[in-house]
Figure (spheres, one colour):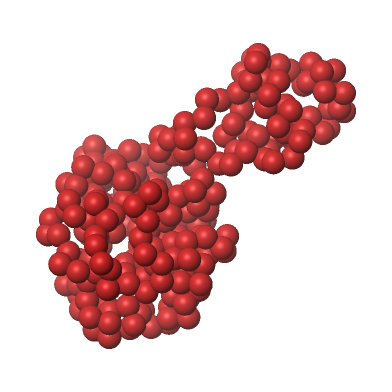
Length: 274
């Protein structure tokens, strides 16, 4: 059992009386962001759930979800694949993982320094109402909740509404208007309850996040040069005595990290937001 609740969870209603824990204790200094969604995502939803989660983890975020099938699992998996911590809130006890087929994966979460949490006794079974209860914990721990895909009536939308009521930020993936999985996200956006996700880069910027810069010497030198003044590829080649192919390759890495952008033929440094 956790000795004390993190401050964000002390501020939600109803406040959990206790939390049972498997794995690492929660870190008051961690940047927690939730990713939730349907158990049956489309191919697009699956790709975006994994890619968004991976991008967040690469920015130092701890992804939080509910270990369910579909979007939840993909969000956790992106962190585990990188060997990073992730947090899973269960509707059952921490020693009776729901769904049971994710028992082995829960062990991997713990091995990667992550946490399995629940309000319920260690071997308690999940009940339908408990899934709804635990959703407030997912949103409550996090400064933002991201909804990937959700039907018009779903647990993911309940989590989003909890986040909205808890004065947390909510983001919803823009999807195909003809797909049932998109309806929930579109409803959140139409009601001004969520900011639309139109690209991962824009999402990271809105969250004040930036991926770690490439660590090779050339990327660092390029970043230093254009930090003083925007420059084109020709100038960088002349200044650093490197051929254009190497310069372009390093610029691409810096651009993917959200550190630079091209404007009017010149590359400029983006201000780091975190």
